[in-house]
Length: 259
Length: 371
Image 1 (cartoon, helix red, strand yellow):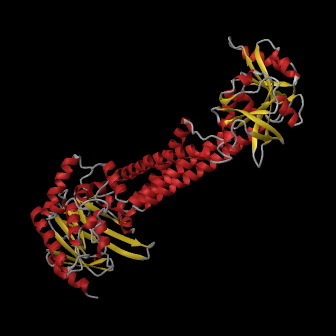
Image 2 (cartoon, chains in turn purple, brown; image 1 turned 30 degrees about the horizontal axis):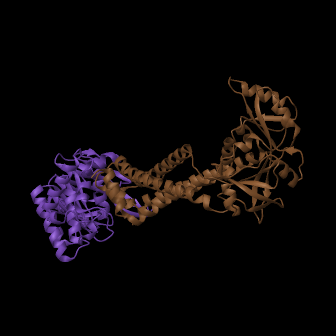
Image 3 (cartoon, rainbow over the protein chains, first blue to last red; image 1 turned 90 degrees about the horizontal axis):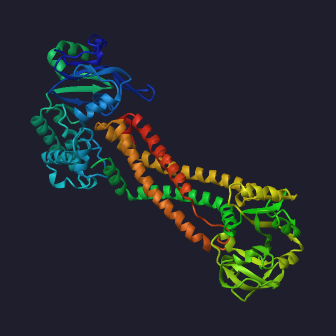
């Protein structure tokens, strides 16, 4: 089973167009994204399969397209061309993406992206809106999640009064409170000092082990990336290395890596 | 926490932004109410003043372009009084007359012994006796504006009159009156044997009585009879005032609309990044829009309360402003308040929805990049 495709493989996506293997949670087929009216190619013809339960690190230099790739995986940005498949089905329309983000995809951002006027527990509770839970049950679930990230004692503090590490814990709690199938973490330690970065990384991997969700981690940090079973390297908007593909078809990768 | 609770927290924890937005809405509502009310107040005051006199009909010179422009001979009063169905009639000469300094006072001249004198609501003093000359009764507003009290003298049209009574009319126009014996005013204004208008009370036991009396009076020739409202509606001065009122109202509404839209659009645009966060955690466009509109409505409610407070303060303060308070009253009607609040509601909805719609149409990633 080939779970990752390098962009240089050209038309590989057309052969597998709009289909994915049975255990694939999310897949990209021929996804491209350009900015500034085409002047900047953030992603070019990306094919990628991520299986349920995978832990995938996406590495690459600044501006290589890592965050754009994550944005495609959670639908907060739309490709100019290509398709995103969720459990083998194309995801079309913002309503479908909203449902997925509310029920099945949790996102942790480098900049936390918390609502500054709300407390920690209120920020976590926000992610439970629209799930049919009463306010009491929402708060109870948010409190449990904050307890799991070690922030229960500070749950009623405004997030603006929390340290960077604590804010990222709140963001992790918010991302996981719906028990998502897929966790996307975009440079989750990028805004933290080394001690906090290490603690947050440990927390992420501990929760991943406990909850078993598929995890995609964008990072500059090779050590952190090394904690994932699969590593994808991206450069100039193209996948140039995929450890999963390397494991399955090393000759192809070696051939394509040559100039 | 629900959407209203979320909105309330957002508003409470951004006191400066919330305060400025509410102030903007309050000023818009208050100034729109004030300007529109003021623009209507002169006509409303005049209408209320005439109503307070209790006339069934007022008779003027046919073809007179405005209430100050027509003159009727004294003797016509007796002919009108003799019309079947007329219970009583009294001539009146009126004009804005210089009353010392730069002030002009709306001055009325009434005949000796007229029933009109009997209807003056005196606060103190008395009305002139038959044949008494050189005396005046001032409305409370006029007395205050001129700084006169009973037994003082007041100069009107260059003649000196002794204040013998102070009247406490309720309408602002009537509070600003000076009442003189008709003969004195005719002499001082060099309009002997002339009146401007004839007040008429008529029998109206049956439907159509007033119309028959009106027709009979107009049959006398060169006269037109109408109700006080009709008279003011046909008056050229008031037609001009109506046009000015409309213009001021349009300007007031436009200024108010710009205030409200600006306040809410700025408040919503500032939240673009937040809207991106809501979208990123899976809120639907509908829910995001609802949260913004709920916040807009909360701002609307508080802003409107503030605006009504501003206009109430203006209503209280206006009578104390010299040269304004004795001419116009400021009482926004229930209909005007309801219309203003409805317009503000529509504007607040549009002011919240338009930027919210623009924000939710943006990709969440783009919204999150906004500072």
